[in-house]
Image 1 (cartoon, one colour):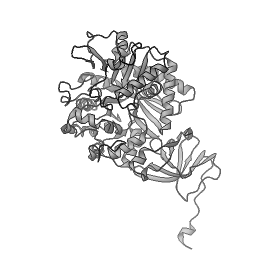
Image 2: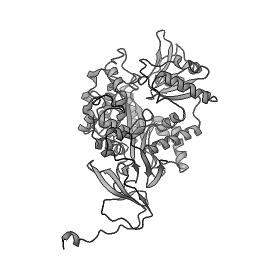
Image 3: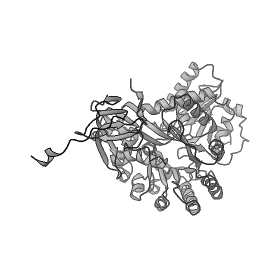
Image 4: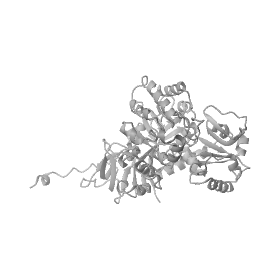
Length: 546
């Protein structure tokens, strides 16, 4: 008798397990970052992965439940390393201009919204992008006044770093030609020095402070809406980059009511909310691992689209401007030190090459004092001087980047910088080659939270229309497995959660999605069109496509 036939059958799996998801085309990543295949997933009573099963391996005979996956593809839940939860919800519930392709379309959308919302004292919205509109200039208050004059209007730019106000909003805020630029901000002005209606970075507060504050019920509704959108896109965990006290209160109310499903890793919006919420260290895991404040987010500069990103050399399309640093070198180090002394993780927004260099300098100095597993994070890291790229790896600094920014920004980036300064732009492949930890997200609502177009962007360096041909800076393309890892294991590592999330290895949380195609067997366009069918968190189904 052959030796194979004499082997005893594999032992039956103990019946203490909760459930079995079987007959699936499953993928996860192994310890070396390679794809691992399976056909069944066993879930224990704590909502964790008990075991991955392959063809021919024994299944429990009487699980508490059994889901027939019908050969659908199963992936670990995707992890967005950088988003803004309440902003996503508020944008979805207000005037959303992200789909507008011209100023005229935006004006028409504003007119429709104003007609439908006659009881709103102020009109608020966002998502506009003058680059997408091919406007050749920033929009102005006059553009809004042509549609709405009788009520204040505030519209946030897609990157969240500029606000457009109409004349009524500026009047309510007391803005005039005599209003000075605040530190870290800029009021756009015409040739006579009059405000045009655009307020950049810290200047936004001048006009936004006049608007009535959001009510708690409005914030609760926004965060609940954001959760629904994230789950529908297969996002089971996200870093909320800039949580304030009001956001935290809404998240807690959602958790207290048993309605918090998505896992939120909170980074406070500066020192004051950090200490007010978390006190002397990262919070414990709340609501069964659904919510935790792990660190703080600071800003080193603004955004490229509004020319607020801080550059080493002037903008190619605005020679008199270099962008705006938010803090001096000493202040940056003091802020980071204050958070680090209580073991909070530090994430710093840095887009321009000067801002990235400032943060890297601060990390280099602080790393000698604050040792251990710090996992410094630089958010965006979009424009980096080539000579500064190796410095990320020196102290294990995580590059938290957004692939869709590259495909949205490529024309603007070339105009802002010129072709000779793009060597370190959106340099994902170089980061990996230099052994820099790479985490991917979307920066929603700046971009859609849907991770599948983001994965396709990382692989092709092209947008959904195939532009530019061959990909923008194609040497920075990633493999599909590398891009998938950045949205799973890379993001989990960036949030100090790799011990429980990112893969479907035994002992990790049973967070997974079922999708309508095999992303590793289709072309990039089909990958973009992937649809999530079911989302499971902690071994429980929390969202189903209807």
